[in-house]
Length: 322
Image 1 (tube, rainbow, N blue to C red):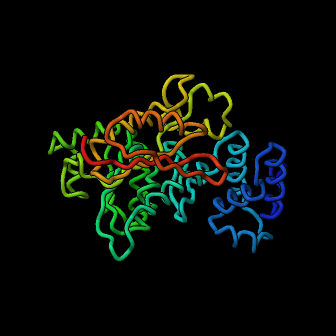
Image 2 (cartoon, rainbow, N blue to C red; image 1 turned 90 degrees about the vertical axis):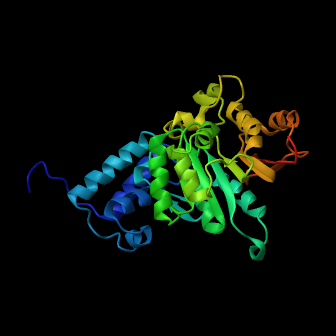
Image 3 (cartoon, rainbow, N blue to C red; image 1 turned 30 degrees about the vertical axis):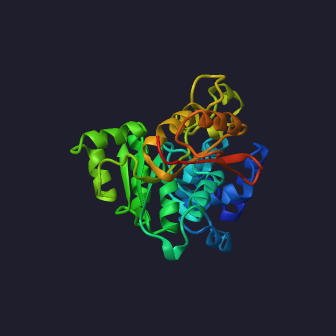
C-alpha cells in the first residue's frame, strides 16, 4: 500500500468519529446528524445504513462524507447538505435559496385545514401563499385537501425553481400555480395585464386572472425577525436567505411585512375568508392592535400557540363590507 493511502474504515467507525466531532462542536442530535449525512452519501435509507454498518466505505464515499461533515461543523444546515427536509409528513427539496421549513410552520397548515368544511361538504376553494419559498404550505395543505387550488408567490425566481420541483414531485402542478413577483403586486399585474405570465398562471389554476375579493385563504410565513437580533442567531439560521428572515429596520420589531399583509389582504379575500400568518415571539399584541385599527376584519384575531407555548399563528377573518 502506498504511503499516501488511508486505512479503510467501516460505516460504524466513521459514524462514531463523526458523532464525537459533532458533539464536541455542541451540535445537538449528533448521532442522528452523522447518520443522515452518511446515508445521503452511500444512498441508502438510514435504517439500512445501520443494519449494515460493518461495511467499508470506499475512498470516494469517505471523502464526500468528510466534506459534508466539515461543512456541518462550520454551520451549514443539515437540510442544505442533503437537500431535503420533512414537512407535515412530506419530503421536500430545499436549497440555500429557500427558508428551511420548520415544525412551527406546520401549525399554519393545521389551522387552515381546521377552518375547512366537513369532508362531505367540501368543494374547490382558493389559497394564496405569499412568500412561498419551498412551496411547503400549499403542498402540505393541498395533499390534505384535494379541493384546494393555490397560487404561490415569491420574489425570488431561484426559490420558485425549488418550489416548482416540489410541486411536481407531489403531483400538484395542476393545482398549484407559481407566480414570480413581490407579494400582492405580482397579483395586481395579473389583474391588469391578462397576457402576463402571472395572469396565465392564475387563469390555469383559478380560472380567472383577477383574484381580488375571490380568495378563501391567504397564508404566509413572512420574514419577521428584527435585523437588530441577527447577532443572537445561530450560524445555521444566518445561512438561510436574509430576505426570508429579516423585516423592517433594526429596532422596529420585525413586523413590517406582517403589517403590510394585514393591510393589503383585505382587497383579495372574500367575506368570511381568512388571513393566516406566522408570528415571532411577542409580536401578537401589537399586530392585533394594528388589525383593529383597520376596517374589514372581524373582531379579535384567532391566535394559536406552538408546542413551546409561543403565539405562532395569527389569523384574521374578513368581514362583509369595506
